[in-house]
Length: 331
Ligand SMILES: [Mn+2]
Image (tube, rainbow, N blue to C red; front, side):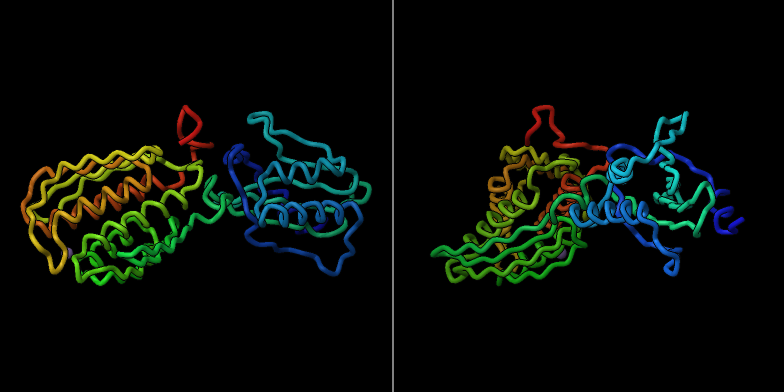
């Protein structure tokens, strides 16, 4: 008996984790017996799988695998407990589903001739990916906006790591935008040249407009996201709450009196102007509440961090969500 075969057959074939919405991507391929002739039926199956991979940007669901095999007249074997397919077979090929120790789907393909295994099993491993996180297009957006007052180029990636490349000419504002990226894990690149000889108002507001627009654009149809996010965040003596609903409707509630102090060149009340602009052009609900604390720098910084945290939650893919998280069916 082929020692490789007995090793494979000793492995269990659990079916949990093969939910309908799961997406798997091929992670690695091993145990190819390259020097053995690939038989026509196996070549057909592999070809079908390759076509699926190419068509769907290297992503396959277990259903895709099923389709590829069913097209070749394969028979199915079900696990009686879960009624999920665990095996597809014909006279010439035997393909089993199994899961490795880290929960990754594997197919184990064996080529047979009259029930005799001709070559060692071909094991293909697929990596589980949360539904919606990679199958959708990249969640990035960019904008170039030029007016008589400001010239802004901004790009972002919702699925980033918090990288920031910020230059607005307003020191305190750069500080806030950098920590917004950091705590939202949204990669943010902003180059803004505004009429700072007037004051920072136009620049701050227009960066807000650009940020809101690109957020909405990168979110697309909002399928598979959490939609809501909130954070209550302390910064020394200050405590603030920020809550967002990516509802498609702009509504900003600002219950955070910030003392009208000038921080570098940044007028503290501009924080409200900024978030109203983001919320307005991003079409989402934003509620900002200052519970206590008086230092302007602390209040504004806590607001940016709390809102970053809230946005991070809200834009995040939720693997349990299918489609748009609204009973209306649209956001
Ligand atoms: Mn600070």
